[in-house]
Image (spheres, rainbow, N blue to C red):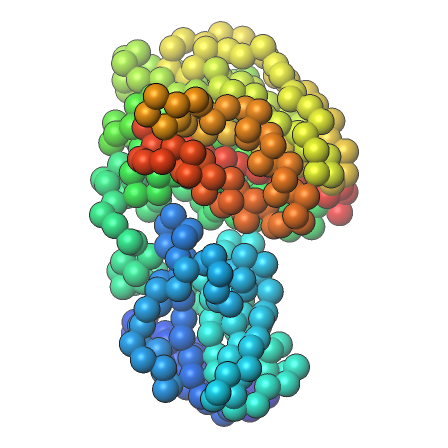
Length: 391
């Protein structure tokens, strides 16, 4: 079966059948191409393992999670490239499942024989399956439940299911990735972004506390931010309107720190308002070269007036990292904080490895957890923006 015919067949099957049949639909569509085994994996919320969805089709046994570190499937996930290996039954191919830059999981396919066409087919199907998984997730909980390796708090449920955009996005002239931990308990950290013509707009937030109330505070701020952005309000006006909304809803008993900003994609001009949050880091090549500052206003919800807009001009290839205080303040019992200096060192090391933005953040958070040695006391969040230069 030719590649377009396989794609068309899968689209027709996925459109007509129940969403929990996705693995069988992929296997049926790939059978004429010589596939002897098919399995689909989605990444868990903590991005430590790849979790199987549905029963694999073929000679392999029951579904089992696969660790990202040290596995062929994990290598495909980390690099977002097709990888292959010869087995006793022929060949096994792993292809990333993604929607745009959002890393969703991995497609695993067995072939008796392998050629370039089979790898290209798996790569294209990985992109298509990313969209199908997103669509299927609207109609069934089965895929969502496979992503979870533990109980999710109600606050985290609100964050993941109702508030947050995809964790990664890429288009000509821009890439962004974000990471929030602890994934199953996150209660106040949030982010948002949108690309509208030549303007990339973003928000990076940390609501006071670590509870359902914190998530509700984030919800008010995100709704206020999107409302201002879609009305075309400037950054200071948007910040003041958000502040008024938080005061009205929480009467000074909750506040939210963070940044709201925008990047002019043709020129690299970055503008932002800092509402009492740690400042960002700018990396050029594999080195942090600046920590842009602006006079911060009060946190949102405490009565801000006349917020100052900061300005910084990025150079092509620059990356800017925003982080919450939960990252640099993480510490083991009686030990030292993780600290900004350690964050800079890790950030530079992983940038030097030539990793994708999402993989850089994933590895940094793994080390934050390793330093903490047990549960985080506060949300630890990161957002990385890359500006390669004008399109």
